[in-house]
Amino acid sequence: MAVRMKGCSIVKPAEPTWKGYLSLSEWDQVGTITYVPTIYFYRPPENWMLPADKIASTLKESLSQALVAFYPLAGRLRWIGGGRLELNCNAAGVRFIESESKSKLEDFGDFSPSPEYHHLIPTIDYGLPIHEVPLLMVQLCRFACGGISLSLAISHAVVDGQSALHFISEWARLARGEPLKTAPFLDRKVLRAGDPPASTGPSCFVHHSEFDQPPLLLGKLDTAEERKKKTGVAMLRVTSDQVEQLKNMANERQDIGIRAYTRYETLTAHVWRCACKARKHLYEQPTALGICVDARSRIEPPLPSGYFGNASFDVIATSTAGELVSKPLSYAASRIREAIEKVTNEYIWSAVEYLKSQRDLTKFQDLHALGSEEGPFYGNPNIGVVSWLRLPMYGLDFGWGKEIYVGPGTHDFDGDSLLISSPSGDGSLVVALCLQVAHMESFKKHFYDDIHII
Image (cartoon, one colour):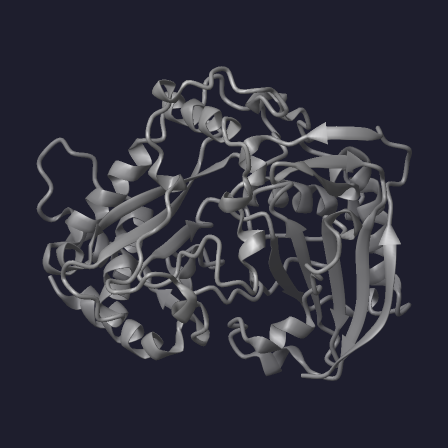
């Protein structure tokens, strides 16, 4: 698909904002600190098509207004030593790219992510010094049919999914001429950002397996070979009946009084098992599942409404492939629940202390693994399943109507997957999965065939 770049500008806050250095929490600085892309497709009515710059000017003006309240997004990151980052609130602005294509929305079919998306999503140059890269990049593309796409790439070192969608929804409100609904809470000191550790004694820490190196394939000394293998992306749709069937399978042997397994626990358990089957793991192969838990209400005191930053906590469920495959679905679901239930107030604060005690956070950051054979790698034999089921993804209206599709941008890390609710609200779900090409067809077969096994 040919996309022609028409222009690029920097959008700055519409009014003067506070300037200075803002400390990041330890959670902001570990795991994914690269950029996360999302893309929206719209078919605006004719009255938005003329003049030709009406949509772009509306977006840029409202974005400038939104950056007054959300001014950290207009800043830049900088390294301060020990693999740690600091946010320079300097109002340098965000990048806004305008483009056009002769393609039509109909050319995208069901909008499943594909290499074509690369042309519609801002490119992040990770070779630049980090203090030169905007924290938010936006790309608008007009298609020949009158449709548009709006894509965003936002630094995960600054916000998690909940905070990113908070910003985007408030931006849309301003574009519609409405006031902010919920102002962002910007003080990250509620997570002790910038403070020294309370204690450096190792006895005060619970063991946090989420910071350990994930399992390797049996017989392998590193992940170099797996990192080089080609990956592909699939959007696997699960009907509401299939969701219920999986839940019945997971809960059919549950003891009375035990809380039923949730959609997330059930479907993630199914994905984990199918990955082991598709990869043809040996029975004794260790495998880890990465789980992202929103800690906003699990921490004491709960984080303030509108907390703007990272409050998603990564934990790991582990098993052997043989146990996952040979035992009922409830076994895999139980391993997932056990990992999630570890995320208590005490566990969260001990993780904060653990990270604060580290002299260098580099080994916990995905940025340093890009194009490298070293650093964190959660592909084969491992997998990660992130839930977007409770995120307010849909209904984003900038004044020309709601989107006709929204989803993740490109993602090409083996084992990276998302659970997304269907916009229809009928209870169906979508699994957006990235897997090695060699394993994808086998995974799809197990994924659907195994749902019918009771």
